[in-house]
Length: 354
Image (cartoon, rainbow, N blue to C red; front, top):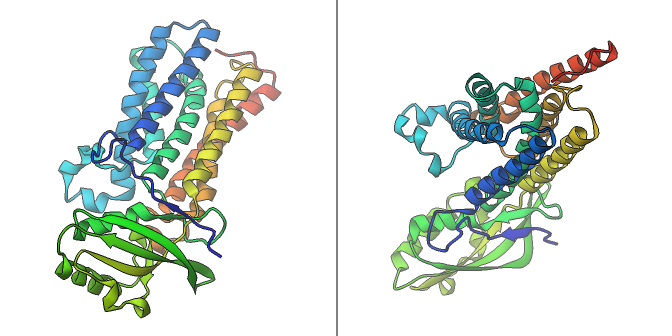
């Protein structure tokens, strides 16, 4: 029994236009919500709103720059060292959360240096509350883009990313209409049942030669994870399924764990925990604790969720833990340092800070 969901939601807000896209809207939405949350905190503590406006400028710019450079150097330097001009092409995609975290910390340090008299840890304790909810929004944006995917799974709520397959079809046929339906059959490989789908592609005009070339390529292609196809069912290929203006093929699709949803929920829970911690405690007395708890929560969770995700760097297939996990460990250790230091100070009866 196929329990997977076919995710056929495209990234476009307006059909036919690449920009603006849904990822950008969720990214910006997370920033706006975070801004109003911190605005409420600043009002509670009677801090001038000018301070927040300056913080927003530094953090947004440093987040984007850090996230982009993190992707370039942590995940895909082999490509970018040969294409240096592409580094600034943020609109083409490629942002890394670990780079964003480094960028945010540097941004707050610069904010302290040039714009604010507030202590760095005071600022970070409050900023990370907004960053946690923004992370939730960003993962929903990743879902809209059909990216940051989980490993194959035939469990309930697993997802087949049909839009990724459509991207491949565009390489063969610029214009087409696609329809699909589950046949109820599957192919079991390594204990996972891959559902079979009947896929019909309608084309404008006569494209018999292009169709034939596509069928030949795909029937001999074998597994192609990046396009969500395990294999074409060659036993069901027949001439009556191939016409000049359309073709029907049978594919075993790859259902995957919905890790974008898992992460979005995880970051939402972390946000609620940090928000509760701020409002129900003396934030000045635990200065640095909320920041440390954020690092432990976000990157500790990230470490474990990576076991369910496809690696994003080429080297990940050859290592015991992937790049995302390697990068998460230092952040967790830094978080432990701040949390344990504050607990030790409180036990000694240190006075209130900030």
